[in-house]
Amino acid sequence: MHPGYGFLSEREAFAHALKENGLVFIGPNPRAIAAMGDKIESKKFANAAKVTTVPGYLGVIESPDHAVKIADEIGYPVMIKASAGGGGKGMRIA
Image (cartoon, rainbow, N blue to C red; front, side):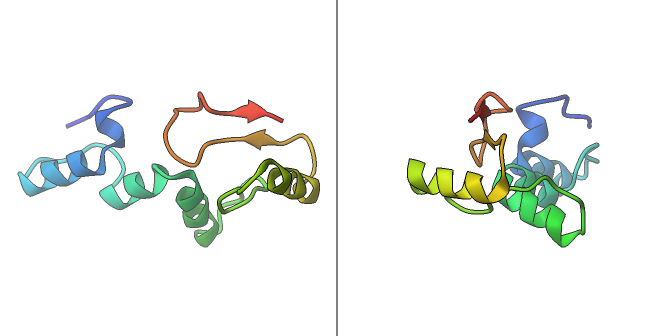
């Protein structure tokens, strides 16, 4: 089964349910879906696989001052992205 794009293709539970019912899911395995749903975890996953990624911060940014400190270390320009969901809608140039 090909889930299309968006809602079902991003649901780890859907991929598991298909497998449990003997259907083939055409898409990433459930573990990859889970990792890609959280941007911090997906970056850790990519780093562990030795995939080149853009510089960034792999944690919770606690305050605007913390964000400025991190940006100063990374270098400008920077982009702020929510760690989960949003489909890119939450990205902002800072």
